[in-house]
Length: 242
Image (cartoon, rainbow, N blue to C red):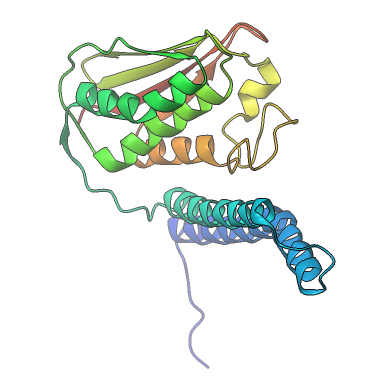
């Protein structure tokens, strides 16, 4: 028999973390995929049995279910990679003001559809060394979350500031706001502040968890603030300048 394998405390901690992430992933996949897969199976079975003909509306519904499943699987994969420290980052010096402007421009049609104003108040800041693709994803997730929770005639404002060591971006909305217990849970996987929102209308439930994981992968952090229901919310993203 060979000698028993020994691990130092760091290796053991990494193994424990990897196993916990694997267990969490399998539990999440099982829980979150069950409902949409059941809907797909039952609808297709009804069509095969000619109980329910597949008209255009039903085909569109099934297509939307498959799109949601695809988004969910992709989001779970990215989140697991980020949380395990294996998300590839291609860091380059980046102009955050330009990155914010591009992201706002992408979401402007959705904001107009919801009658919500996207206010770009970003000052000119020093360049920061980040993966622009991943931080654009963070901005997109934070802004779409704000749009989801801000009523018509509301405003979402993006601002930023620099210190010697950090660049801080803030996204503030005039939306629904959050209670203290919601603030503590808002970055958890599959957490939805509004329980009445379906998976289809409320996204995959992973957007803010991905935001936190990508921020951490950059050596940064993200926090949520609110004075309570009806008082709006602010999400603050801090990134190291180097």
